[in-house]
Structure formats: C-alpha cells, structure tokens
Length: 369
Image 1 (cartoon, rainbow, N blue to C red):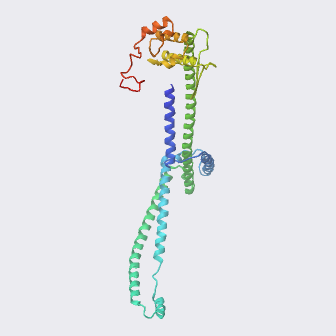
Image 2: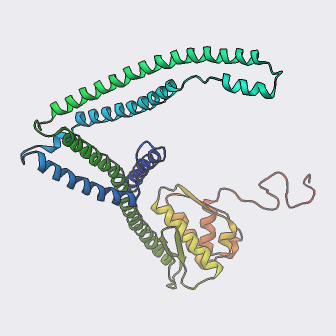
Image 3: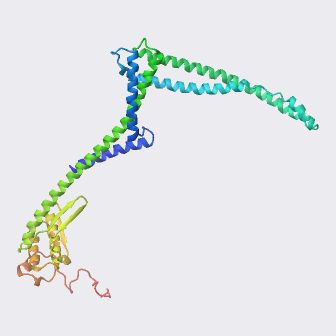
C-alpha cells in the first residue's frame, strides 16, 4: 500500500516536472496565477464581444461552435502567416522603389569649382571614377528593377492566396449575408478565446497535479503514521511480555514511539546502565520474534552490565527461541547452577588465556610470542 502511494507521487511529480520543463523551454506557455486571472478576464471580455457580434449578424440558431473548428482556425493561422509575409515583401518593395527613384548626381559643376582652388588637380582620374560609378549604377538599377518586378509578383501571389483562404472560410461558415469584416472578426475572437483557454489549461493542469501530489503525500503520511503506530504497538506488546519474563518485580517495560523521522525509546526514568542494556535486549528479541530476522548477536559488554537475576532470565529466553542467538559471556560462576548448565549445553566455543581465538596473543607487546 505504501509502495503504491510512493509510485503515484513519483508519477505525478515526474508529470509536473515535464510540464514545468516544457514551460521553461517555451514549448508551452508559462502561465502564472496572475496571468491566469488576467486571461480569464480577457476571455470573458472576448466572449462578450463575440456574443454581441453574433447577435448582430446571425440568428439565434446559428452554431458559433463551428468557428472553433480546427479547420477554420488553421485557415485563419495560414492567412495570418501570409499577411505577415506580405508585409515583409511590401516593406522590401518600398525600399527598392525608393532606391530606383534616386537619380545620378552630376558632379561637373562642383568639379569646376574645385579646380579653381586646385588647378593642378587630376580631373581625369575623378572622371574615370565617376564613369565607373555610372556603369555600376546602371547594373544595380537593372537588378533593382528585376527585384521590383519579382516582389510585385510575390505580393500579388500572396494576395491571391489570401482571397482563396477567405473564400474557403466563408464557404465553411453559414453566414452568407454577413459582412466579410464581421466574419473575420468572429474568427479572430474565436481564435483568441481558444488560445487563452489553451494557456489557462496548462495552468489548470499544473495546479491539478500539485493538488494531487499534496493529497497523495498527505494520504501517504497518514498511512505511514498508522503503519508505524501498529508496528510500535506490536513491538511494545512483545517487549511487555518479555519484560515480565526478565523482571519478576513488576518493573515497567520500555516503549517505542515513532513520529515521522523522530523516535523515542522510553524507560520511564530508569536510567541505569543495566536496565538500559536489558531493555535493548528486550527490543532486539521482540524484533527477532516479530520479523523475518534470522539471528541476533549480543556481545559481552552488553550482557555483563545486567544484574544476574535478569541475565539468567534472558539466557532462558535465548534458549527457548527457535531462531539463532549468538552471545559472548564469561564468569559462569556468578550465575545459578541451572543457568551455567544451560550455557554449557549450548556453547560452541570456549576461550581462555591458554586457548586463544587467534594464534597470536594481541595483548602482548611482542606478537611473536
């Protein structure tokens, strides 16, 4: 159950990341809350204009939704692109016509005045340059005239295409008697409304994903809290049962509480080292019995600090457990005869100063001995 919630949150988060990344790369409009409200207001204004225009030119039975068809909107976009191209071509045509109107400058009057001040000036050289400029201007003028003709052809071709698109749009609409400017205005308003609705759609989608993520996260937190409460309850019940076996004097059992990323392991004021270690053993044994944990290991420092009576009870619990328990213990004479016999019965390895675990005695300075 927890895994399904986590997978859902990951899927929603990934989907939101894709949406946000697409907006950053300008693949879709980046709509903020402020722009969303502004778009809503604009949509309302455009819708009112559309309704008013509709009332002026069509009957109440007309289906205005036809204007929002994909085919009509595509034709409108195609027309808009053609008009943009036409504007560019007409601008180039205007510059070309301006260049063609520029006449050649006669430099001879100015040149004669210049010679009065500089009699030795090389006039022939200037005349050669001027002749070259005249020749170049003729060539350029011919090219400009060719460009002018080509631009006029292109402009006329685009105007023809625009008329054809207008005819297609008009043929797909049922307003046969409506003025053309009114039809254009209706299509324009419908296109603007659709664009704004599309923009706001991305915002609504992102908002919906955020709300879904928030809800799923809250549900997951609540589920985790319930699961953790149930786990803690089972562990605390098991530690209570073990505590009664370890201490016959009715001492309070430890309790585990987990809240989010924090936990408490309470011993109710008993801060003694022996009690703390015994409670830790109680916790380990509870997990050993409640989970698939195959074994536990308790080293000597953990056991030797526990009072004898409690340790003897713990050893009895060890021996009764069906799973494997590893312990290290010494000074068997400190415990009862029954406990010593129980440890002897289950022992696997016994060490002494003469029987070392390793060949070398690491306590000595000279490790060769």
